[in-house]
Image (cartoon, rainbow, N blue to C red):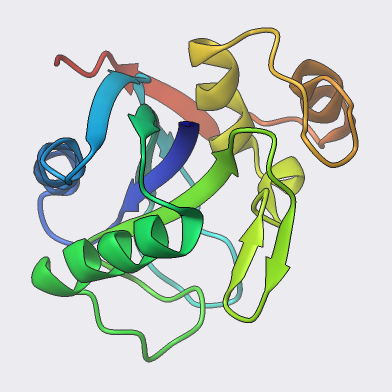
Amino acid sequence: MKAFLGIGSNLGDRERNIRRAVDEVASLPFTKLVTVSSLYDSEPVGEVEQANFVNAVALIETELQPRRLLWNLMLIEKRMGRVRTIKWGPRPIDLDVIIYGKSLIQEDGLTIPHPEMEKRAFVLIPLLEIDPDLIHPRSKEPLRKLLKKLKPHCSVKRKGRFWL
């Protein structure tokens, strides 16, 4: 199954954290890393004052079921020092399942597609870099159209390519 993962970091060496997380995702069982978007610098979401994030999106092919994939991503976050104390607070790594095939899932602790994706330029821009024709699985709207609905996304700046 094709899945898109959101990756972000705003503590420590942000780019190095993203590279390590991508390496760990690539080593998951029954999972192949297909590509990674460029890296983007973006302002944090929420009311907590903190450093900017570096964000990217990875496209993987996996045989892991969505809940198992999320569980593995949370293990990677934990190994990399993420502690979930403040909602939308600073973190060395943040890994999210954004899209999992055409799946629509609404369970305790797991919503796919990610419920905030259409509100976040730092997710939509790298998604569109990987697949410019991507359609939102729930709303059936092109992501390009969703991005145009957002206020100007000048707070999301491309930092450079991610080298596999």
